[in-house]
Length: 229
Image (cartoon, rainbow, N blue to C red; front, top):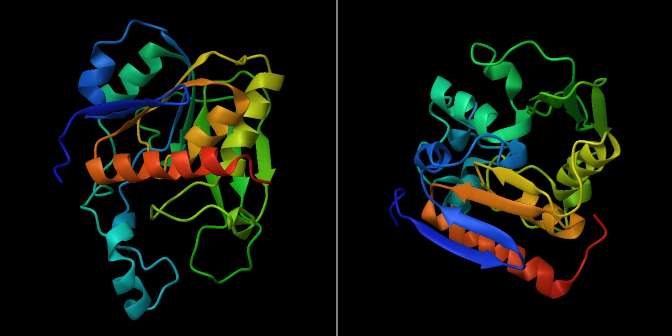
């Protein structure tokens, strides 16, 4: 399935769109979205990582992990300019890779994975934010999200997105029913958290297969009902 397909589906109030994010963003009014929560490519070829798997195990997972060179380069300056234009506040995972395009920040969000040393994974990940508040840390081991199947190489856990929503709400940057944008859907786990928090989420994904899998992933969750995440 082609990566440049365009398709839209609304499920339980969540708007799923398969498209190139830049043309979409160019058409949006300034400040239309209250918050942008995004996880763009870091440009580190993560699509080629073994992610702790043997070669044989990795081969069995190629339908999940081998879907094009989506992490070959970071987004353009225009992407970050457009994101900051159409969203009032931003949470940008991998912000340490994009410092040429982002100003200094008062607040970073950190995900401490609480994992043993020497596993080959990063011990933590960092998000640049536009928030005017103190730095924040979410401490929870990745395996505690085991109830949610892995459908993307660099999948962020549902509990992390729930933590982000809770922090944005408590700091007064977001309210139930307000508009949130994600420009790189990937696993689409943010949709589960947004649904639980009653947010009006628009989630973009250029790869049609990830888009379709993400919708099925979300539908499976909403049919099963809330999980203890």
